[in-house]
Image (cartoon, rainbow, N blue to C red; front, side):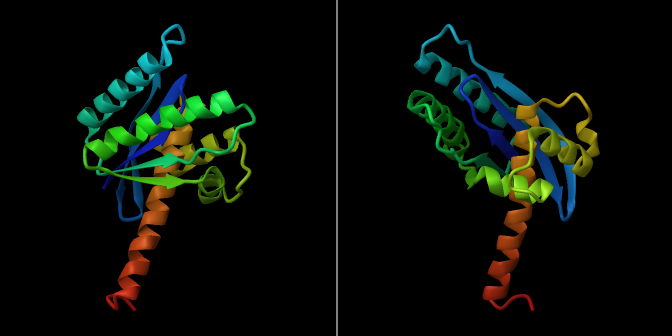
Length: 170
């Protein structure tokens, strides 16, 4: 299964694609969708839409996962982040791809074992879990891959639980 992880932002939206084959994780690609700060908010949201569409068309993920928004002290920034996040979510949803949401602390705990892990710790663990990612990974791409890894871990737990509840696995 191919998973698209999304780290939303108005300036930079990080994305990462991994493939899960049982317990094995394989790196496919990652990158950034950067918007032009000189453009209007609507035009910048269009840039995110176009960038996300290009990622979907190229990599054809099966599922997507995105970080939930946390409360920001600056209301204007929070609203802009929410708009960027909404666009990043609607593109895969419009393509019929299920989009799962995860809290930042849950992502950090799933990857590092600590819900308050630093960006450096997250990047190091992403490279440890998927060595093919390499060293030139930026924080936004590392976060996007971490979100995808978190989804793999939690999706497999959800699937197993559903099988147990249905009486299919003991």
